[in-house]
Length: 226
Image 1 (tube, helix red, strand yellow):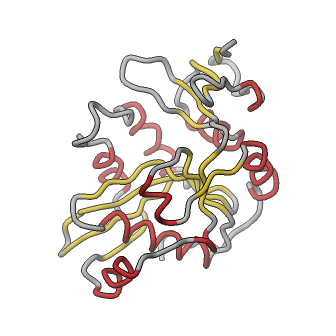
Image 2 (cartoon, one colour):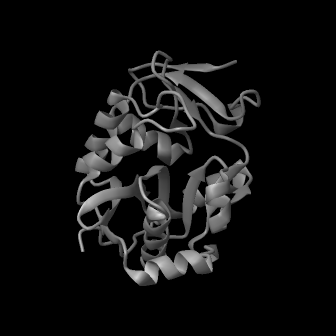
Image 3 (spheres, helix red, strand yellow):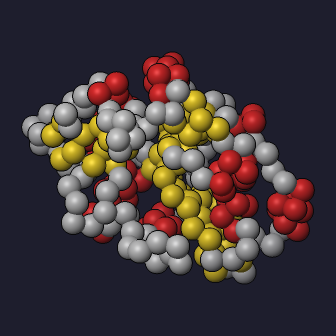
């Protein structure tokens, strides 16, 4: 039975109670307050829903992750990075990145990054939890991604690309920095061919929960404003 969250509590049901069909649906309801979102990621779930639906919280099993030490950068992508066609920055324009991620896609109708979601994650950015990666070409924003950093874990949310390899350059650059900062895992949530090409792979939900328990409160050397 699906758990409906109350606005008066931030507690989520145990991850083991997530449905098998649809895979990983853990709870519904609640709100998108910064406190609840932080609690969700710390618990091992994330919001994903479409306009007109109640807020839905997911914890799929298995969970797709990327270990920074296992990243695979193709020769062609490495060449693009060396060419310096794109300039990559962090946390310079979070609002523009999440708005671009919410923009129309040729392969999908609508977006799950609603106005309410954008406002919620912008608040998390202002509180130091959410971060953006901007990829520019001659000063124009052509790609990027955003996610949350807690302890030595990064929780990826969405990316966009308006130029060849732009989002790939941004992601590869981010992973290189996360590795240097001592991050041990990047949560990719759901599998895609794009992420698989970088070396992302599935792990059991219970194993993912173990990473949360061990590394959420560990310090890192992250410097997002450098």
